[in-house]
Length: 69
Ligand code: F3S
Image 1: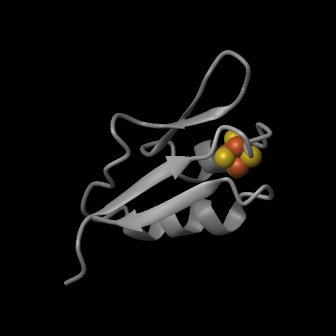
Image 2: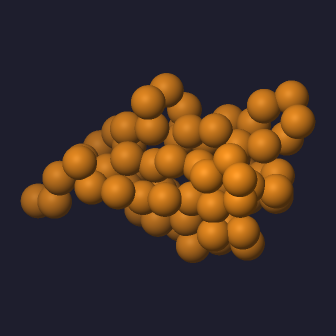
């Protein structure tokens, strides 16, 4: 079993496409400008790993990092 995952949104790259939030609302939230932030400290709860990678691969700006803790 792999280690726990963390997601992070690069604020310089995010352009507010919001695909992350629609694909994985448990992991991403939008601020008042429409830019995404990871929920909490970005830790991916068990069972949501696929959603983390799905959001990453669907961000047109390649703004989402998924790392293993
Ligand atoms: Fe931003 Fe990509 Fe989400 S541009 S709002 S991180 S889909």
